Length: 232
Image 1: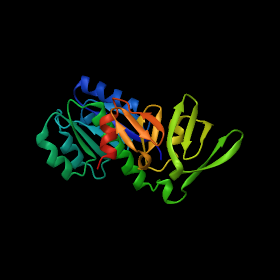
Image 2 (image 1 turned 180 degrees about the vertical axis):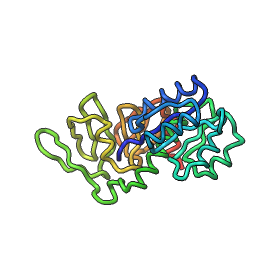
Image 3 (image 1 turned 180 degrees about the horizontal axis):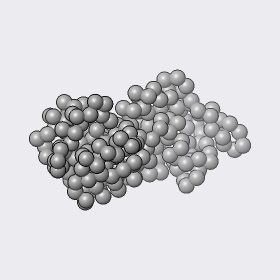
């Protein structure tokens, strides 16, 4: 799927900087602007429509909730606020998520993944629904790789190793480029260098996943978000 374009709006400089840092760590988010209030946001949206807003609620002139209600066709919204009491109003507006400050990276990432899954479903980009495999070039030939045979993927700079049931394949690619070809909802990133097939996970001990005879690390920064995706 295409990257999700977004804008950050918050009247607190520290909050804007923190959210911008989070967005820049997530490869499927494409930041198009940072605003101090809803008036700046309104002007920017006229020039640069986007898919998603990270929007504070308590701001000068007009609140985030009032701003969204005033739009005829608002983008999807993730509210970022220090106030719990607006949660019900936020969800009545069908927002993607409601993040309470201070916002941890794990909680932010969970909201971002939820948004990615929403857009993937809406745009009918769940590849497995139509073609349950891809072809990759390995050892000078094209290899057919069925998604349901993948155990996990390991990225190493400009090379990726795909671990299958009975073998592994090395291909010249980045992990980001390969993940974009995988069906949404079936795979999860556990570490900057690892993506695993959720249904292949055997056990989890501490920050380690066991997938058959393999051990895959879980980043301490992603642990909470990973567990929230796989524990039902």
